[in-house]
Image (cartoon, rainbow, N blue to C red; front, side, top):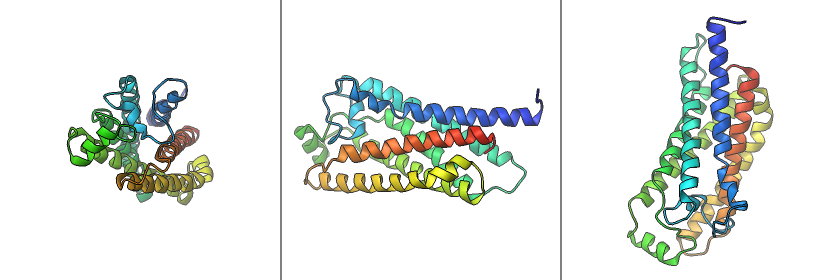
Length: 235
């Protein structure tokens, strides 16, 4: 049985993989809308509207968001601590990538504490109040935390995929990561354009479908990352 630094390192790697993997699973909790009656059209509505304060299942989705964010944050933070303890020179792309993952986790957890008060894509009164600035400050705070979360996710996805290929590590991520990077960027572009059109009063343009693909690809990539870390047993 391995003991000492090697055993400690192995335990740390397993912990990173487990935390990220569980976080990825929790981040897909929104798919429960397929079997639960939410009253929201998944093609047209924001994913975050599932967790709005006026929704009957809002508490459930806020809890899963917080759980996902906390798990990923802890996994990313542990990976950064391990990188800082390594004797070999720190690799820029790895540090940037894990920093992005940690930011994503923290901002996702914060999202759960900053829910929307209503559902602007389906409630005209809510949309009007939001446009007029008559909604609680949590709406604006939620927009900020959501933007930070997705920025962190994009940084993590791109940087760690590049790191896997450049440093010849995390073989599954190096092989399949680039495809997920492209899919994630396309889904993000779709989401941003749809949000801009909705904000300008031109309809939703399947905003919900684009955003659900966006968060789905993040979750799949996180799952791939967890599997890759587990296989390699070193980050």
